[in-house]
Image (tube, rainbow, N blue to C red; front, side, top):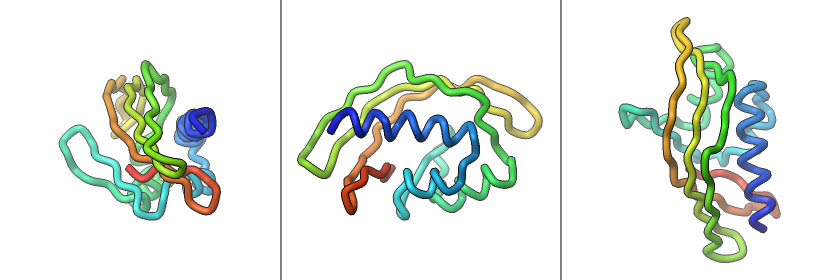
Length: 114
């Protein structure tokens, strides 16, 4: 199971860079929420819209740590850290962050909840 979750996160990184909206829609649950550095919440749809309109572009991403804790057969918590190179407002920058995500298996497939 941990291997499937790890692959989900690696696919997520690749699809953010490729702006593969269909794949992002599969990876992120319908009620997915992401927070930016100021604490503002973004829904899955807002994230997809921002990527589609090139409001933000992920140029590169690298996991600098990831730990998966299984809480059952269908729920896990993923603690990790990332370094992403992004372009926003015509400026490139490197962002570093830590995260705690919940992943759930729905209909046999793992999805990121938050």
